[in-house]
Length: 286
Image (cartoon, helix red, strand yellow):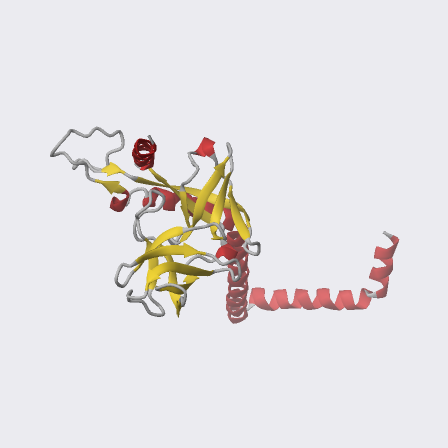
């Protein structure tokens, strides 16, 4: 309190001058129409700019909630896409399904489930991603995972009640069946453990038509991913001297450095397909 009075005493003349000037400005503006209009316009402009900045700050503080709402809305819209359903073969049998798409009898095959990324690595030889969603929220082992742009991220390898671990494409054991957009030749997408966001497409015959910039997407030959999801674009085509195949370098369509939300894809037909394959292998072994 003592310091306050010392401050007032020291700067009394300056403070008095400022107060008198402020009072004079008030009188001029208040009792003169033209000055009042100018001052009102100036204050409105200042107020507008301040409100604009406050709104920007408010939007920034609510970005997290906005992103979560958008993720949920995208999940709902993805699950309405017709390509996630398949028509039943009614020529030979009556198909009963509890999740029809429409009155034509189309049934769901693929289900998208949104999830937030809670942990991610890109610099190790074997990189994993942890999702904040688990078996209690419908995620299952071997479900495919894509980013919001339908770019392939990886495959779920382990699930707990509330979390799931994804083997990303940046893992030395990752192998994804893929196709070239031009020509349709098939190969396997792998990672050599060197440069993040740079993949390799192997086992592609040298007779295949491919060039820099061509698209590589999922083949649909496995039960993990639907056909036609983006994996990457060709960056370089090399000839493997030891085989009759190409080694094709790809630029991943997914930015693994900036993953925040992803979608796990459940295949409703996967269990039936795996059961048939298991029975076929058992017959061969017996």
